[in-house]
Length: 186
Image 1 (tube, rainbow, N blue to C red):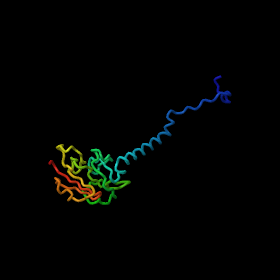
Image 2: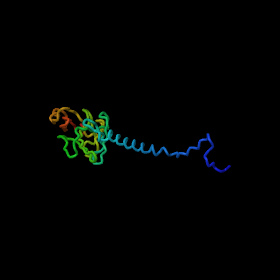
Image 3: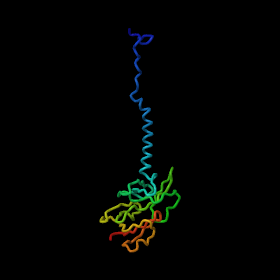
Image 4: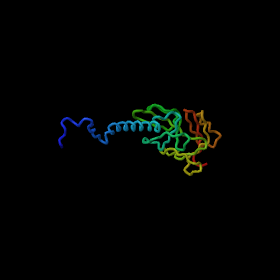
């Protein structure tokens, strides 16, 4: 009775299915998860980093250094402190004007020529800081360094600031823009 039958189980009885490992599904799911994560990481960087930035897009730049990690931002937000005015090859020069520059080297190399993203009446801190990103502040804030009293689109001529209270004119050739600025407190 304790001996197995040499001819298999009696007719009508199915043999027991071999036991499957509880983790067998991992050999199929794990590669799919890895591909999705890598593709997702690339997509997030493309759409929020500078690789996908086009002329007219705005960026949030916290510092102007080689370690900077600008992120795309909605132009209407306070974090969007610069706008992409031109995108050129990494060895090319920005157009004539007071552009800040951000260079990306590697698989894709380019240089972004950035202009300040402000409208008339905006005030900024960190404007003369050199490395710190511009910060939009209320004009009553003691940290305010500059106030933009006039913005002239379509014209890159410092003479556009004549007749204003401006103590400084900032101009960009592409797109043609002149910004009239009062430095310090009024």
